[in-house]
Image 1 (cartoon, one colour):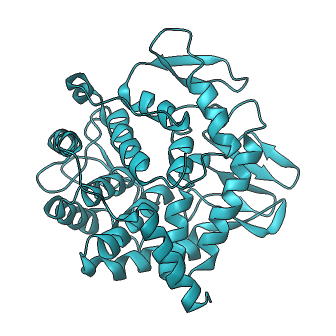
Image 2 (cartoon, rainbow, N blue to C red; image 1 turned 90 degrees about the vertical axis):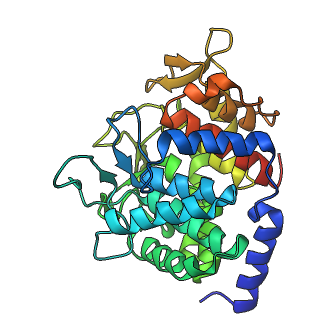
Length: 342
């Protein structure tokens, strides 16, 4: 068990490093309101406009974090109420990963996606710790403990080290563990590890950052990869590529104060490799060849964050972005405000 004094000192240091939401600029508040109006239903359901208004545990977790960071307690409560009643259907404290809007059987798959649970727990922790919405602390700790119990696996190369699994039931054997680099939000893991007195979460954060640095030596920083005793291997269930998942790796590392990790440089260079002026590279094949580029402001914000550059001001055109880049743009703004170093 973590030393109690160490736990409290670590939590206090993290809060001082930017855990508390600073006073928001009018521009930032307006961007949040636009995002809320477009993607949050009155009942608290976050919709993905490019997937037939489907909802995901990821979107609910992001929405909770955004509401907390912007001091919007009413929306936070709506988001958490909808999530608790509609996605928290498992026997543990994790969520089903997808909710499909139809008259019956909205949950097709009860399996969880660990990043959604991680962001929900972190948002609940921040709400209690930083916003004074104390009623959410117990639930944050309960989720963190189930992530520690169900979503960690030994690294086949070094069984004493822990990998964050993409789901509680995802493939993890001594010979092969499925790993998603973009699920590793190490700051959230550390803060939850301290709060819940779960050292495994902190170990997974530390080792995960090492794994990301190792992956930066590969031709691409992948969306998915298998970890085997011999090293990295193409994932069995997914295509080997670097795409929209991997875009989040530099966002989370910079947010966690790890802007010097080689994975940030690797992804920054990939993002900036698009040949077209004003465009960002967003999808690459296994060899690193560019497949798709985009001018969405959300993706450009990730590139600026990775480059330790100022983020461009929001413009009216940005409000036309779809759910994913619009969300990344807001998250990047919070990361820029809360990062401890560039």
